[in-house]
Image (cartoon, rainbow, N blue to C red; front, side, top):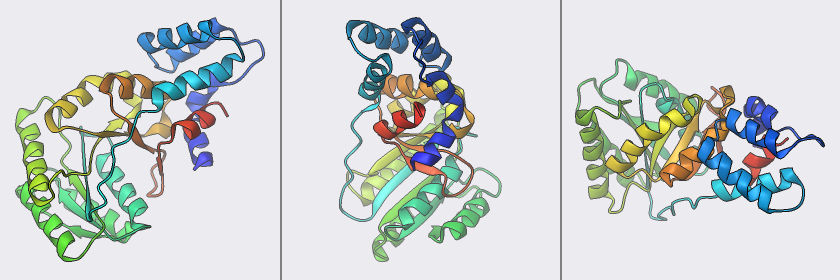
Length: 279
């Protein structure tokens, strides 16, 4: 995991390379270049100035404090239901496939193809399902997405599955009709499993940096997101944006997408993330 993270963070890590001559001013400049943002850069620098010791060790601890948000507690009752939403192009369906592969190592997984808008969405997810060697409930274009989710969860209970992953159609946060569909899907999940979904995750393209905060806030307000997945993390120098994103939204980052392969996803652990960033 650590090696994969180090590779993914190569662009961002350049800004956090250790040097004996590094000054507080240089750290401040590099935080801003990494898209940490003015607010959190000032907060970090203020704390560094208050403390004595190695600048980089103090910086690491300040970053850890900002990144160490509590993760949602998963219900032990099976199946665990994970709903994934996101705007178009955020890497949502690929992320669903990666999670399917990850979770299949520890149990039986079934996918719900809740994207009934996009041409060939079901076919695409079916290809990923075969790669991950998991079951899938496919859908037809124009079908009621909530009914697909209902059928999938019902099948999961009947077959004693461990995990249900619900893919949804990519949508703009400004489309009230499509946001209403997400609410309907969530209501169906809650009906079949009170308190569900166990994880209600939002995919965010890491390349957008802080620009993604407002769109993510609307998703969180509308459907009660409880965790984030930052995708395409391997291609960005804006790794620092993870700090304002999770702190402004008060939501933990649970996974990072670190490549295009089905194995290229890692659980987000603040200590390991920081270690990779400073490697």
